[in-house]
Amino acid sequence: MVVGGTGGRGVVATASYEARKYGVRSAMSTREARSRCPHAAFLSPRFEAYREVSDRVMALLRSVSPLVEPLSLDEAFVDLAAAHEPIDLSDNGVRAFAEDLRHRLVEVTEGLTASVGVGTSKFIAKVASDLDKPDGLVVVVPGAERELLRPMHVQVIPGVGPQTAERLRRAGIHTVADLETVERDELVGLIGKAHGAGLYHLARAEDDRPVVPERETKSVSVESTYDTDLTDRVLIDSLVARQARQVGERLRAHGLSGRTITLKVRLHDFTTLNRSTTLPSPTDADAVIARAARALLVELVESGQTVGGIRLLGVGVSGLADWVQEDLFDDLFGPSQPAEAEEEAPAPEPVMRRREGWWPGMDVVHAEHGRGWVWGAGRGVVTVRFETAHTAPGPVRSFAADDPALSRFQHGREDDPPA
Image 1 (tube, rainbow, N blue to C red):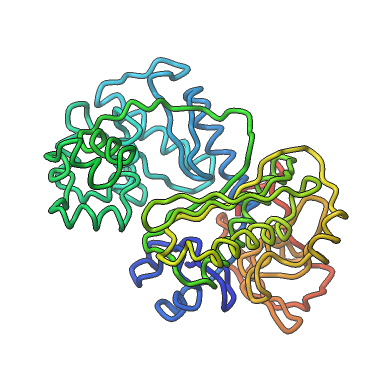
Image 2: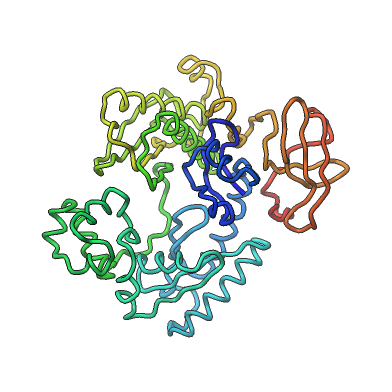
C-alpha cells in the first residue's frame, strides 16, 4: 500500500513495509512509486481517520502518565517515572508493563499494532523503538546504552543526515563507536558549534532532555527532513502544498485559524531560512496557506539560495485566532482552488465546507450496502469495496458519482469504530 497524492504530480506520504521492499519511500513522486511497485494499492490520506485513532492512542498514554510528549499523530514520548500509579521500573517490570500497554493499544484502536522502545532517555527510547518494527518491543537496560549504539551508523543520531554523514565519513567517522573517539573541539570544527556539541553528548548516550507535555498552542506547523537533498522544483512545490494541507487540517481540528504564514527551509549545508507573510485576517483554508507558502518559496528559489538542495521543508501558521473571515481572501488570491494540481488528491474537508468528488481510500457509506471505501473514481463513476477492518474482504460495486445513496462516512462519532 502506498499513501499520498494519487495523481501524476502526487508525492508519497508513506508506504507499507511490503511496498518499501520495492524501493518505495516517503517524498518519492507517485509516478516513480507506481513504476517501482505497480501492483500496490495507491490511496489518498484519510486525516479524519488518523486523527480519531491518534486521539485514542494519546488518551491511553495520558492515562499512564501526565508527561506525554507527542512527536506526531502516531508517536510520543512517555515518562514512566512520573506515572499516575507506581510502576515497577526493574528490567522485567518495565518489559511486562510495555507488553501490557501494547495489548491495550491494540484494543483501543481495534487492531492496530505499535512498536515500543524503552530506555533511560528520549534518545535511547527512540532508537530502541526503531529496532524491531513492526509490532516489536525493545528494552535497553540501564548501563547498556553505549554498547547498543557503538556498532550503529552515525545516522542513527538525530540531526545526522546525508550531508553531515558525508562530512564525518571524510574524517573517517562511520559508526557511533568512531564518533565516540572524537574530541568535542574536533567535532565542533567539523560540523559547527551547536551541532558538534550535541553529537558529542549523544554519541556517549548522554541525553537529559525532559519529556515535555503539550503547552498552549501558539502556532501550528508541519515539517519534514528528507533522506536526499531536494532539488526538483516540482517536487518541492508539491511537498509545500501537502504540508499546507496538513496545517490547514490541524487548524480546523482545533477550531483555529491564523494570519501569519511561515515557510521554513533548511539547506544542504544546514543553513536554516525562515520567510513569513501576514494576511489581513485569519484563515484555515488549505488553498490560502498553500498559495502564501508557495509565494515565499518562489522568493527563495529566485534568490538563488536553494541551488545546493533542500534537506528540510516546513510550513507553519501563527498569529492564531478562533475565527475566519474568508471572503477577504478572494480579493487576494482569487477563487479558492485545491492546494494541489488537478491530478493531486483533494484535501480533507474543511469544517462547514464540502469538497465534492471521490478519491481512492475515502471512507464511504451506502444506504443499502453499508460501510466501505473508494477503490477508484473517474468519468462519472465511483467504485467502492464494501469492507472494514472488522469484516471479511467484501464485494466491489460501482455507482454513478452522483448516486444519492452513497455518501462520505463521517468519523468522530463515539459509536463508530475506525475503518
